Length: 356
Picture 1 (tube, rainbow, N blue to C red):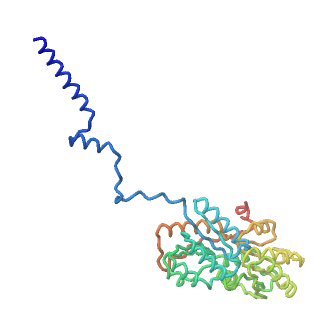
Picture 2 (picture 1 turned 90 degrees about the horizontal axis):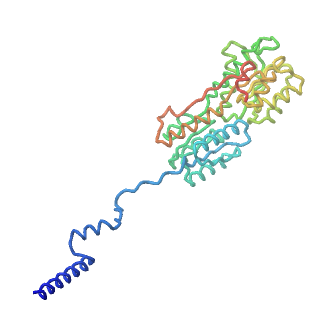
Picture 3 (picture 1 turned 30 degrees about the vertical axis):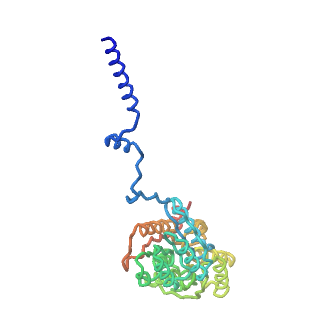
């Protein structure tokens, strides 16, 4: 009996030992197979859309300036650079060197590089058709600045906008600065205002309007006017100095008013006025446009009758705002493609408000 019990116990122990060893072996049980599969890493479904990479801050902007040596456009382009870079854009600014063919090449180069938008200060307003056709063919959102095409020219491309000032307003304000003097510009009391006009670039619409509307303001106020001379000065200080020196030598005390289409030429004119022994606001009047720092100093010192603020910072700000609207998908209907920033008259009474 005892032998039988011992034999049974040995068999039971052997069965238990075999079962324990068998538990370490893989099983074909489907449930166990599923569990093993879920523990392995899964392969992503490549047919599902993936999250796009975050774009770089801002974008790439090409800026074309007609000429770096222009004092006003230096202030303007520096403002553009500061605003754009402050917003995270990569900015490349090029000098057209007052050469339209060169600027055309620069525009094409920017397009080839794949810039996101262009800001263009045309060398020549007459080149607007070619510039617009080029950017339209490339589909590049474009802001034109400082030199305004016609509404008809801009209407062909709905991703184009002009930002600037209405030059007619600046010319009118120049005339008003003269009308605001005690004798309304008629220093010698002969019943008429005898003036010389130092014009910028006559092909430029700003020069055309400033020339026309400064005198128109006098005529509209009932004043008789006499143009002694009108000469092209190309916006340059040395040309302003040369032209006014020649005119003062030729016309002498007949010259009562000197109109300059911009401040740089007015500063040059002032040098010749002083060299001739004349005194601004006593025996001659002198007005400009732009409100450059140098001109503001002369207005404050009484050496210029006044100037007109051409708000470079305001225009640069508006240009960037419009560019960003275009980049956001905005398009413009015909007749809605000009955005204007107001000019402001600067006189000895308010000049301190504009000085840094």
